[in-house]
Image (cartoon, rainbow, N blue to C red; front, side, top):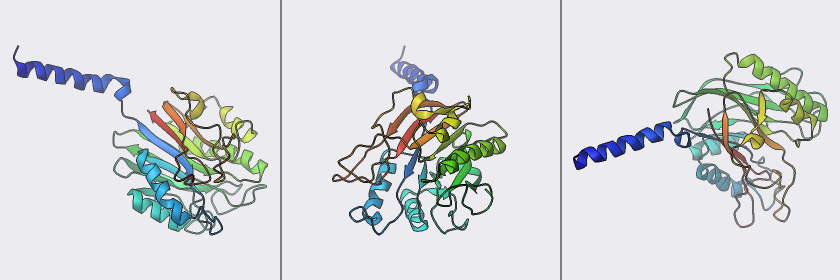
Length: 282
């Protein structure tokens, strides 16, 4: 057998192995990240100093879709410009640009949006409003995506109220209802965000009470990586022990790994929350 033919057979076998071995199957990296609003009182942790580190974290971990929270419009613009990303979502105060966003940023080279929207976590979800015993307006932004490989799926990104327990429980019920209404094709769904509740809270438990939903942290093929909490409050000397930022999945999704990322710079964190990353395949 000629050397050329031998090399061709070896190459063909290797290419076939890449296409059939699940370890080499196309995967997707998504994250939820409360970036902390641009608060001028955050002395020592101002957005102008943190922004570069937030951006570089997303770039380094090659995150293709990231749901962020507490995002003001100028922060949204800066993130998208520096990442080369696009985003969906609106400000919670007026349904346009005022107030915090809970947007979904995505790499337009790999993902396209087929449909999207935002609803308020309240009894009047179609208009700017505050729900139940919540202290503030809260929203859920969502998108129906198609990947460059032709995979269709939904992403929902939330930021629950930090005060109202009834609001958090009702928010979970509302989002469950909205997902069921929107996802008529039974596509895979990723539901992420800052839920402001730990797993022992009814607002968390009502989600997993639905047989079709899974916590990505608990269903990851690799054991979850990182600390036991996601809110640091910028405190370098205290490692948090309560997970309040979650990623849930529904449908034919395999979670390959899940991690709570504690990337830092000079004993400082990019935000007062740690981002939560998953790598998955459909």
